[in-house]
Length: 234
Image (cartoon, rainbow, N blue to C red):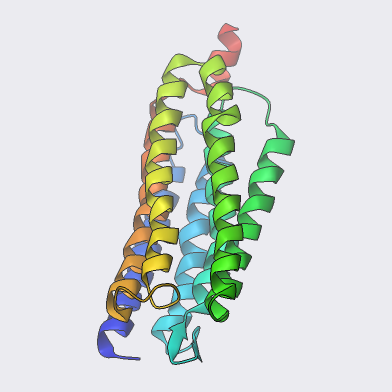
């Protein structure tokens, strides 16, 4: 593994740990936001840092048919991306009872998406595109849940919450579109872009979609009327 790739992953580990520390400091003054929101925000970058540490340390990847498969990415994503969706669902349901069936559906679909992505990376053409397609269908269903039932829950709940949910959902959606795009263009797919660009993409995308998302989401939640005050008014 060349020096650029190693340094890039060490940088990622540092950013994730700094993000986790930032969310911990915020949790000391929650401003009415439930502690579980902060716990999710803390766990995501901590686990992601551990997974990417294995790559930075020269592990966490395999050489398959003259290309490098970073399986540690998928070990990261199979835990952290469902939690991102749970956090987004909790935002939509901030003032209402949590809909467990919707949350479990998101988690189930996300696990399918990640594991089929891993199989796609380990597979040769054309099977890699078949597995990629299955994961893409799962992602599209996730987007449907995010933009239809969850958005409707937020909309019926509170106007300010609805605007915040819509903004963070759009933020996460745009960055998540980048993942299958980067995979398709990278060495595991069409091979249009180099390994260095692929690695850079999969360093920057998670930074923005994990730490960036949690900063954005928690800021919006901290600006909302605390649940207890709102419940007392009702």
